[in-house]
Image 1 (cartoon, rainbow over the protein chains, first blue to last red):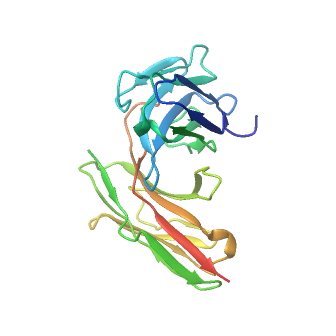
Image 2: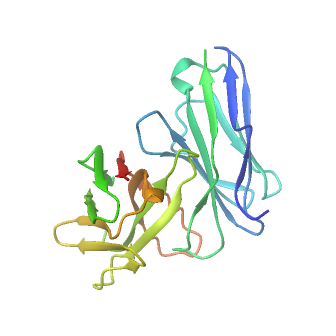
Length: 114
Length: 119
């Protein structure tokens, strides 16, 4: 597609539910990032993939968060046993090969845990 | 670790006027990029302008320009002839460069400035 596509755009989950958020990066983009943006804050890094390899997951807040990109294109961020503090916008971004290239963001998935 | 500070939570300006958004950062790195991103209500982060730290010349993109003061670790954004469509959250971001072609170049963002253009 022309841009980074994320789904669902909006998700309401009951506390304790598992959720899965999907990201379709720009075709051919090697690098893929997930960020978490709480209300009134700037985005914070969660994890990074280079093709299918997850090279950095230092930003994942707990072991309830899990991300994968099995074929090096589509990525899924899974949150198990959701808690209220997980409510945020989850932004996916991708970048083509070559350091310093522009990082393109999707419109995000807005998760509300009730 | 890098930190990015935006000390102006909100700003407003009349249409067609010029406005400057402030950003300071803290790092021990010598090679890095700085960015300004715009985030409209749709939540998509849109790149406005970027500056390579090794370049002395300030970046410009049409109505947008930066004042990059490396020694002071300051990176302000100037918007000239502001338009209603400029109304959005603006985030300053830092990215350090690694030596490899596939470095994990994650962005560190500030907390943002909400800019409103008044008709």
